[in-house]
Length: 125
Image 1 (cartoon, rainbow, N blue to C red):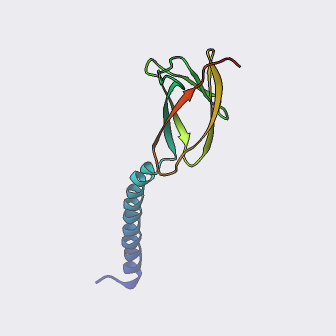
Image 2 (image 1 turned 45 degrees about the vertical axis):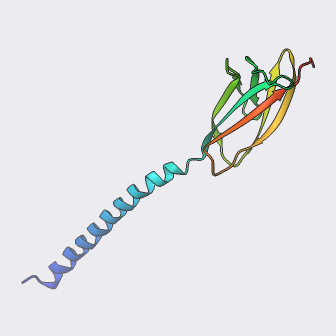
Image 3 (image 1 turned 45 degrees about the horizontal axis):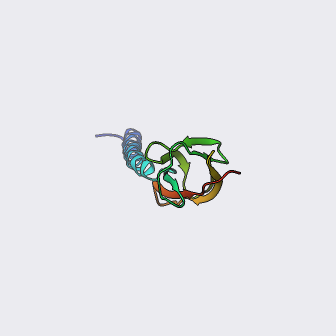
């Protein structure tokens, strides 16, 4: 029969082993949850003529506080990735045949992707 001196260390090893296994299971269960709670998202949009609704190609779109710049493509679309959720961004739209235009965009904390449409007026600054 095991003596008390031998039994106590064996019980400690069993108990700590159990807690170690439980902690490993807890940490692996949290990781997928953290990934789904991403703090980054994408803002996409489309730029058109104010009067005609015609898509505008080559409009420079800038996220002012981050100095990120994109240009509208052949479909008039632009995109910014890795923006913070629950934040206000100021976008500036520039084209040599249109008036410069600035707009605040408030990103929602619950969304992974936002979409906006902007219409620019013809003219020169």
